[in-house]
Image 1 (cartoon, rainbow, N blue to C red):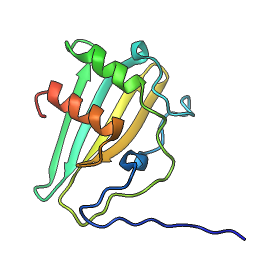
Image 2 (cartoon, rainbow, N blue to C red; image 1 turned 90 degrees about the vertical axis):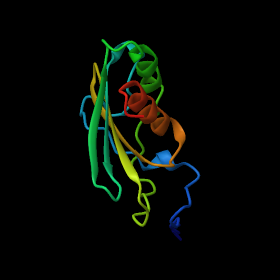
Image 3 (cartoon, rainbow, N blue to C red; image 1 turned 45 degrees about the vertical axis):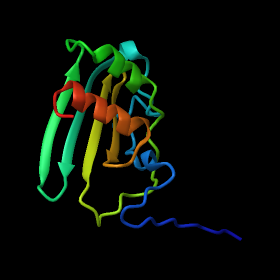
Image 4 (cartoon, rainbow, N blue to C red; image 1 turned 120 degrees about the horizontal axis):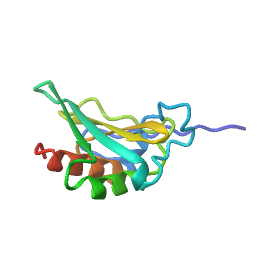
Length: 134
């Protein structure tokens, strides 16, 4: 007998691992989705979208930015993006953060949102702070 469990969270509640709603990798040469070593990371991009105001802003950190080494090391430590996972509750005025990690093997993409917590959210907030938007 097979049993499936569906977990729904309401507005204002967070899932135990909110970073599990991350998108799958987009590069066929990166099947595991890991962003590789810190030296292999070449750029980090965070696109902020959503909220009641319709925010749509993009911030990028490349190797020529003073704090890029620390951010690239954070990106290299991210787990592979989850396949599937819990979706964000659409009822709330939340900003979604689309995180792109460019590295020697291609591109790995993650998605997180306001209040999600976890390593992807921490990286997104750090990139925005370095870019002057945090």
